[in-house]
Length: 374
Length: 90
Image 1 (spheres, rainbow over the protein chains, first blue to last red):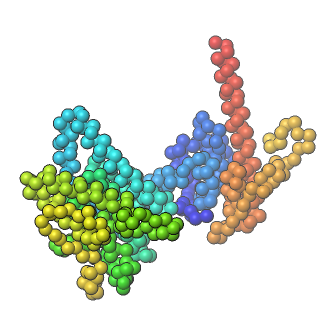
Image 2: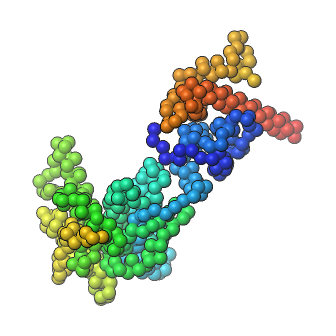
Image 3: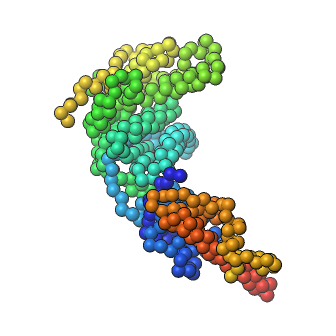
């Protein structure tokens, strides 16, 4: 059985950690240590040796009904920790301050907005949290955390040295995209950025120099998008070097380049991904959609239409506020570009009367710009 | 203290009893330089430099564990009895 526990631990550390779960020693023999809770008949028995072997430690946790994940989190407080090269992403919700201002209007409005926001955030957050927790459970030593504070969300995921961190980088990009999409189809648009920086994070501590510039990252994003800061962009360029054919490179569709040169996460691509997966599965099971539904999975189309409707609504709402209107105009251009690129056969998805178009290109196109001297 | 029922007419030694009850539930595996024996009923684990040593250590651990569990239960029963008697007095 694979283990997330250290190979062995000093007995004093183990006893003190078990003490945090209310287990204390009962009079012991020389050879064994027995621990129990004050009002519980459960007894943990471990050999009285200077160091506790991983298998014995795991057995102690099972005897005591202590989840391994909870124990390993406490363990981080007992052993020394160190920062690792990680991908950090800071994301916040566009217009959250004006949402709070609106909530001040009346109690009824407060509850209405709160419930809408709560439902959207909870659904988006619980999805990425469960992914992060699973990842953390199977490799507790690796840093992989996600935090929410008001409208701010922070992802931290350690990059593995052995593999260059490509899979962690890719998974984090995917998770951010899913988070962005979930919120967007509820009408909350996000902005932020991803950086590569040394970091440490557990349930109580978040520590990284990258946090000093979180506000700056948001400002640089300018529009409702999650951008890749220089460090993340350079990292991705290295990964792109490993691929000859964009068809085999997941990043080809997940990260695109704005005409202004900014690299950002193409979060709507999750819909195409989802649609393709579902259509493939239906084909495998011999199911067919009515011809009228077209070549895309209906739920993906309806989410895309929801996205379209939210942008339309915002464009109308802020038509007299050029600073905010500009942001949603950019979003409308992105939406239209996405529809014409990935859902071209759905004639109804685009937003008409935008008056302008933007053409984005895949990050793969920038592959040739890699600085080979670096 | 014996692990056997006090009314058992054919008492076995503690370790024999452990063998009888737990023998089929013990699994041994190798972990690097040492052997790990785990009892899948009580979930107790022990290590040893050989397979036999790991199993022997585990038998001892199970025996001690059961003794402590028995003592704990007796203490809880005594406490419960004293509490009821005390409550009855009042």
